[in-house]
Length: 158
Length: 158
Image (tube, rainbow over all chains, first blue to last red; front, top):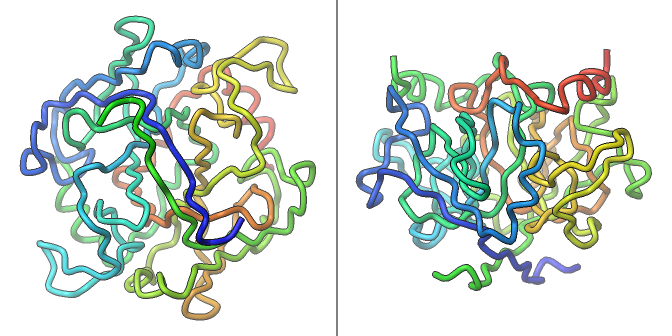
């Protein structure tokens, strides 16, 4: 496979959030307290893939940032005067606009709808994948956050 | 956008690991101790997007699971007799075969090559995205892991 190869994804569902527009979205997935309840509406054909999801307290959702606009490799964040690289940021304007959220899994509403908290994306965002969150490989509570250290602390709900 | 829309990604680089074939790959990103040093080879045109990455101790890498084979919504893991849903598993045979690893960032080798530890994918895997790991939104050390609870504990390096 060469670097010019195009890889294809397809939406497997939608994320339903209270945020109708980009301007309504919180700064990050932990900025609102309490975090509002959101829905993961899976296309029914994928419902069998949810078997054994009960018992996980958190999930990783991947989704398509369809409102992000063109990629910007270097950009100046609204809250910081210095230009930053896109790979040192969670900004949506990425070369491959795939978003990621670690969400609290609150249960199943019907066989193909999950209830979750901690989404920060626009209502209707296309869903790409659901992964179980594994604290053994995904949790690094001591991680250092570089230039985002003071800013992300300030943006978290108290 | 309808659910039949195809979304396009392009590789932005390659992951270089010591694992030449699927059979060589460790069970997960924390199964080997010490975790071998791996390389993230970014296409040079994307190098400017790495600005300000210094200071982050961990990164999230997204990559294309190009050896995964066809998706299996329900499958029986090699280490468990019971069928499980793909969304309750980190198995690569997903409807959208995007893999995710939380890796330790060990520094820059040249302007477009990063040194990392904790990859578990095959050498040459196409890279899709690099995100900074933020403990404020990504670390849930108390997360419960459902059916994988006893198995993942057993598979982690002591």
